[in-house]
Image (tube, rainbow, N blue to C red; front, side, top):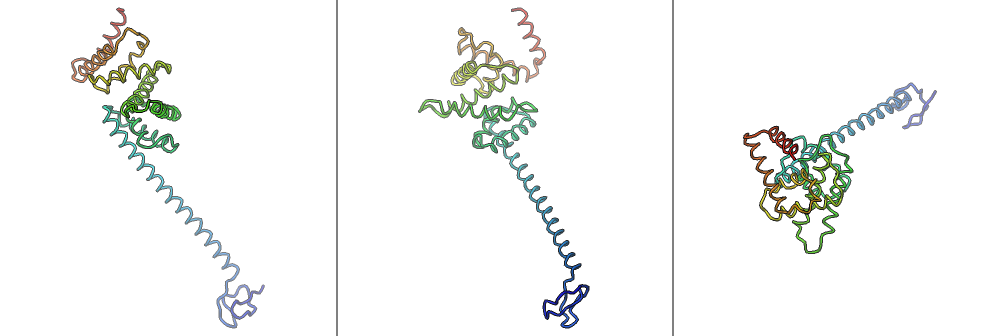
Length: 257
């Protein structure tokens, strides 16, 4: 089988490495195939390397974003007097990442809300759709507020609504929309009086949500209930009583009613 020299067009054997007339190097079939195979291998290898590098960059970028969300949520939580565990912060950051990816709200809103709710986060957490609904509920409340109402009231009511809902669900309770709105109004009224630590308001009202429909309980009495919870927490933290003793006392009280 002959091939032709590209330089002088002399007929040459396909096995020849160079033209016998002019000495021009020849690309034999075997050599051409080798170069093609080598080229293909190079492309595949470079593609694999590129994919690996891009994957590593993506992983690092994702880890960086999670650490940023984690810190944001932690800072917002501490601003609101909420102190989640390390694991709750990790779960909250992953929830924030998913909600931001979905475009549920802006990063600041999502991280601020998750910071306020963070101490009620369970592991594994509820479906992302549930968290998305909670964020959207806060946004709907904000839109429904009358013109001229301060953003503080909008945010506080929205945060309280979501926090109470989260706490009651975590405790196995299912409040109606009416009950959630009642609890939110009570929480805000107690908050507005400014006489008790804010971080104890929603947990107290969530714990005693069975009394929401009792019209005889005044805001002052709800405030006093929060004050009692604060005092009990102080006693437990100081070591004067244990949580087990408190629970036993509560059971005895319930048995005497």
